Every structure is written in structure tokens, then in C-alpha cells.
Image (cartoon, rainbow over all chains, first blue to last red; front, side):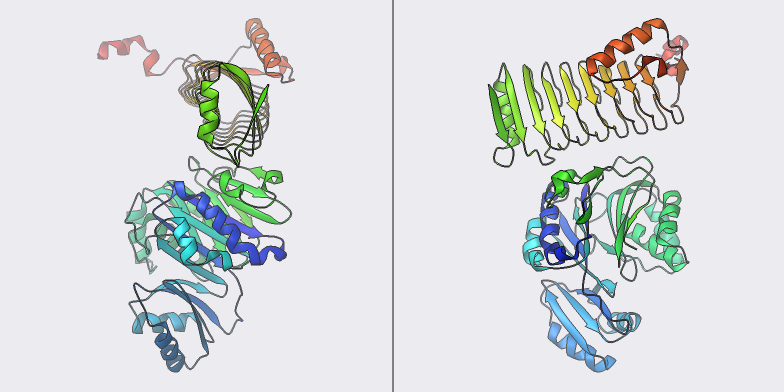
Length: 297
Length: 224
């Protein structure tokens, strides 16, 4: 069992409130996932000439030195903001170059996300501790996904936590379990997709990355996922400008969606959505099985 | 006298304990907020009206009580209902009325997948449509669907009876359409009246078990 939440703000006046709203939803889903928590947040998109990466380090880390080193080696302007065990780097460089350099020079760092707007934070432990550690209440943004994890298929660690980044500005959270992830992981690795853990959900994320790389639209990739992924799933997928939801054809993993003039939200359970302003009068529905839902672009 | 609970202030446990301790009476519940197990395990002729959306297992194991939800219900509403009635004024999520033994569940909106799964005597009236795998392995009781039914309706049915007014997707294993006899028309009319749902009985089709699966073949008794 896991908990998924997602919120997309239609009313930009609410953008400063995004972190606070997400925190309330995430904490409400603690019973479904007390092992670890994570979010993908979309905010402050950087210009095309720049890129934004979220990095994770175990234990204490000298982020200041990293910033200087990065700046010198890449001859780029580098801004770095530390959030607990994570740091967001904005650099006047191509994401691929920055990623290559980091992987070569700093293999001890984990790259959580790359893109222009996405930031990913995840950590093991209770959602309420995560919210406090990362000062979620202070975070702004246009839309976000969150996940509370109760592990079934792999270990409880930060790197096994969700969301999993699936390419530039893309991420995925999953409630359920995939039964063909071992074979699919091998296939994806043969296709050159970098999969870092033995987590089944990361395979779903890798699968989407592969399909998008092959030229599928997000909708087409999700339609194809219905054929290629075997198991139980409710997925929420974050994109630069919106989010998507998909449930497997059996649809025993719950999902509920709601919409008002101000926001669109999805969650494993209504009680997370009940935390949002105006939820009592929202239009509420259950997403149909094997149907792709998308918001934004 | 009406006893009022506000779940923003009172716990679900306190509400349920009060309902379990009460031989009769009327209760109102405000701000359910999608919480789980609201009004579960009642064993008395109390009346409970809940104003808002409820989470999992609302009115589970209900006996004698009348529970009304002015909102939507999460998964497993009225699961294992024994008697009394549960009315959902909005939509219900998956496995509504699962394994219910008696009483009546009325859903004024739509019900999701697996509505009435393994029902054992409960009557379920859905004014809207139901999702896939409804009445899976249903053993006894009646499921009335005033709208449409999703795929695999009545898979592996035993003696339960299904009435559908709208369209039906692919039927489940061993589920077949049967004649709508005068007896069934009469019974359905009474049921719809009791549920307070306005629908013309002549528009319904009946589905039941073909009784061809393993358990219905007497020769298989020799296997043991």
C-alpha cells in the first residue's frame, strides 16, 4: 500500500500556498505510507539556456565547495540552494553536460531530477517529519505530486522512495506492485535506459522515459504501458506544465480526483483532498480503469 | 432527540462507541472528511445521517440501523451489511455492499467496480451505473442497476439475481440473461419502491447463473 497525491493549481494566486496544501495532503496519507515520503514540485522555470537539477547526498556534504568547483569547471553561473539532504542547482549550462560532469566527478551524489522547473525531494521516515525537514510549508509552485510509501517490493531507503524522475521535467509516483519488473528492467537496460535500483516503480518510470525517447507522446506512452506493464498500479505522472493519471485495467488500487475553479487534485483517498480549500463543493470522481487522464500540457 | 457529532472535533471511535452503546435514537454526523469506518458495526435501530463524503468501510457490518450519507462513499461501503438500510446520496467507490448478508444498500449515484462482490443476501439498488466485475461470485440477494453495467457482470454467480436497465458490457463467466417473469417484475417493483428509486420495471433485463461451472456439476462430487 502507498499513498499518492497530486495538485495542479488553476488559480495562480494560490501558487505561494502550494507547499502548504501539498503538506496537508501528504500528512493525511501517512497511514498508507509511513516508510518514506517524497514530492516533485514544479516552480520557477529557468530560461532555456539554463538547467535545474536536484541532487541528493548521504550525510553531511560540502555543497559550497561543489558550487565553486562546478562553476569553475563548467565556466557557468551556478546557483545552489540546500534543502535538508538535497540541493537544487541552477546553472547556465546544458542539463546533459552538467549531469555527465556530476556523474564523472561526483558519483557520490544522486541526481534526483533534471529539467527547467522540476525539483524532487524524498526521504525515508514519516511524512510529517519529511514536511518539517524540507520546510514544505514555505515552498511555492504551480503543481506538485507527492508519495507516501509502504514498501512491498524493495528496501526502505531514500533512493527507493518515490517520485522517480523519468527524464527532463518528468516524474512518476506509483501505488501498487508490478509483477513483470525484473524482465522489463533487463529489457530497458538493453535499450540503454539507466535504472539505478531494484525498485519496481523505477522500472515504470524508466519505461516511460524509453517510450518518450522513442518518440511517443506522453498519452501514447501511457496507452502502451497498459499493454507492457503487468501488475497493479495507480500512477501519477508529473510534467513541466501538468500531470497525468493512469490506473491498471483491474483498478483495485484506489484513486479519486476532484476539481474546483482553483485547482485539480488527485489522491489515493478523498481524505487527502478534503484538506484543500473548497473541497466540500468540488466536483469529485473516480478515474476509470485503463484510461489516461491529463491536465495542463 | 438528535445527538450531533462533528468529526473535526470528535473522534470516529467516540462516534462509533456512542452508536454501539445506543439502543435507539437519531444521530447526525458533520465533517466526515473522508474518514474511514464511520458508523461501523451498529447493532441497533438507530438513525444516522452523515453530511459529507466518507472514506473506507462506512456503515460496515450494519445491523438494524438506517444510515444515510449525503455525499460520496469510499471503498467498501456497507461491507457485510446484515440488516437495516444504508443510503448513499452520491457515488460509491469499489466493492460497495461486498459480502452483505441482508438489509438494503441504496446508491443514488454510480457505484464503481466490484459492486456487490460476493453478496450473500443483501439487496443493492444503484440508481446510476456500476463498474466492472460487479456481483462477482454473488451468492444470494438482488442487485438492481438502473444505469449501465461494466464488463464481466455476474462472473461465477451462484443464486443472486441481477436486474439491469441500461447496457451491459461483456458478461462474466457463467452469467446469462434470463426471462423477466411476472414474479420478477413484481419483486423488482417492490424493491424499487422500498428504495425510493423511480424506474419502470418493464425496462429491466434479468441476469443470473447458467449453473454450468464446476460447483454446479453433481459429477464433481465424486472427486472427494
